[in-house]
Amino acid sequence: MSEVQVKESGGGGKNKQKKQTLRVDFTPMVDMNMLLITFFMFCTTLLKPQTMNINMPSNDKVEKDEQQEVKASGAITLLLAGDDQLYYYEGMPKDEKTGEDHYDDPNFLQVSTYDPDGLREYLIKRNAGTYEQIQELKVQLQNQEIPDSIFRQKSREIYDKAKENTRVAPPTVMIKPTDFSTYKNLVDVLDEMLISNIGAYAVIDITDGDRYLLFKKTDDSKYLTPEQLAQRNK
Amino acid sequence: MAKVKVKKQSTFIDMTAMSDVTVLLLTFFMLTSTFISKEPVQVTTPSSVSEIKVPEANLITILVDKQGKLFLSLDYQQDQVIETLRAVGNDYGYTFTPKQEESFKKLKSFGVPIASMAAFLDLPIEKQDAYLSDAGNQRAGIPTDSVEVKDAVGNSISKDNEFKRWIRYATQIRDDARRGNSDLPELQLAIKADKQTHYPVVKKVMDDLRSPELRKNRYLLITNLKTASSD
Image (cartoon, one colour):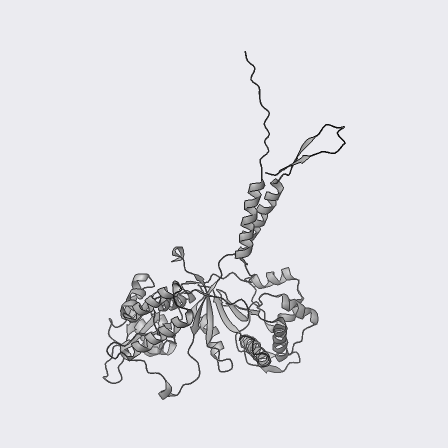
């Protein structure tokens, strides 16, 4: 392949026609290419990092009546505890109207996990109906049957329709990480929100009541604030 | 006895085909890959299923390492980056020489208190890397504590933390530029934290960004694509 046949026809017929093969050795070229490939393999990355969009609630004080009331029946509170532990409860620990108090109910706070058969399964079950509709849209988006703008518009319609459903309120997830959770826990939970097609979720600060619930469940006083601890020791 | 004639065989292997293959591979790598950006600390981002790509420019990346040190990387027009440096420096009573500004332009990411910025910029590039990646270096990382800082003359000038100032000036200068040129996209904030980072550290960063002066509520959390093996 790398041979070029050169016919020497010069010399006026005096000299015998000499047939010369010109051979180029490509081995150094291959060596150099290999080196370059190695360089590229070490210094570059094929994977572009992904991002996840997150909107945090604004820190500004919102007027009380402007605040969106979360329907207690649809509220799910996730507590991200230390050592990759995950707890959740539904509704409110204390009902203002009926006066029901769950703070001392050991079964109120439930244990979950970050595994697919833990939180994900539960959320998909809670989000039944909406989940399937959004999933259908996602498949269409992936097959490029609909553009991104239509996908967003249609999913918004589905979420709005779900909100009107008075019988089963769509889940609104409140994510409350404790000081002992890691960044990975937070991203994992946000990821589950995407997977389970949850329409409304927010990362918010943990309240004293939630701390107390965690303390009750785990019997670990690290979850309590110093004030709560002082009160208990009294 | 018949004499066996040993044929002289050439051992020359034709490498042309091999060369073709390697060149093809090389082209593939050159076209599809992007260079790993140099970062002062190694950060392993958590994985997620989200498939949104990180924008290539007009981005402020806040790098948070395991210990909670902050590094910033400003990815937008260079003249605006320099303006940001001047504005922050000016706030604390520091000015920078043109040579130091030139050195700042070349920085991919930085994380030093403004007080040691000038000295840091005077270092050669290799020394700068060593300075930032030195784990024992307490001065590395952008300070987020709100302590009173004395300027060169000794007057206390600020109770604000430096991290907030950087973000505030960066976005402010950008907004001013956007007023003149509406095609300029808004700066986005990306948080790139290690998965081992404790939540209070991340919360502090978000709280600072959400503070009344900044009012930044939208972030991009940089993650890896979740694959079957990382699950």
